[in-house]
Length: 266
Image 1: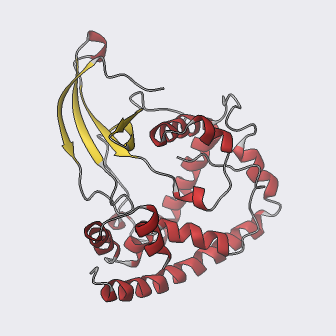
Image 2 (image 1 turned 90 degrees about the vertical axis):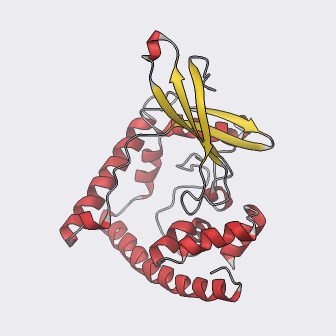
């Protein structure tokens, strides 16, 4: 099983960690989908799709050390059982307090999260130069964020603890999300997806307007537009692909549940 290969060989999760992860994934097909990104990208490479950029023009970067000299560390806690796909990765929250006037004596919560190889890198081509100059997994994450985000977190950083590599970011105090209760009719869903698409497109378009070309020597949106020769056909193919994969996820979920029961994970 693909999920077994990823969690045992690549993530090296213990049986207890796998029980925790699979318990969350077994709650619903959607939870299963959220926890099976490796399976998703495996499937993506197996299912035909016409609109791919050239292998030498990847349009993604796989997700400067900031000093804490202006801050006093007040407390630190380990964050456990957060998320589904992050099971097995170490995560900490640090409470810091500004010591200088320019920091306005502000309390901040910083998150330190273990970084590992991004799942798309196992399946898709990527810019080797980016990896060669960012060998630390934490540095790779923050450099990707700096390259792809128009507004960067000023507290981005990276650190090595024992033999594990981490990245640092400010823990956002904003936790509002779109929840199922907010989508009552089809038109609500349609508007939500449309808005999310517009936001994503705008962020990516603005992100590389001032790129200095030592990671990507081209603009990602230019390469994407280059392979779209028929917008109507693109919409049709995406719709067909999504409908097909929805059914695939539900079937895989049923297989996953049976497998978990056989292995005594749930």
